[in-house]
Length: 120
Image (cartoon, rainbow, N blue to C red; front, side, top):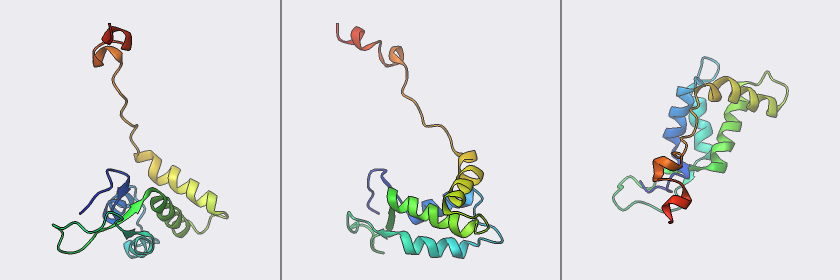
């Protein structure tokens, strides 16, 4: 399938993320997650991949990802009084505990010295 250079994810990747975060449960079945993803995912804006005989795979752009996360939070925690509270609770209970820090660039010497030393 065509890709957007890391700026989008497939519904399957979101589904795996949700499973890894423990979002599906007895009160939130996988079928409900599937229905949310069918509603939010869009055809790939790059068009079909000529090598993909099944047609273009749908994708979630970053705004689509956020919409899916909001919809999942809303459906998973209906007992909380506000949508903002449901999203916050889902993030802090399900997503953030499994998040890894972003990799950082190596310090100056590991890249061959400081900028000044590299341009002498």
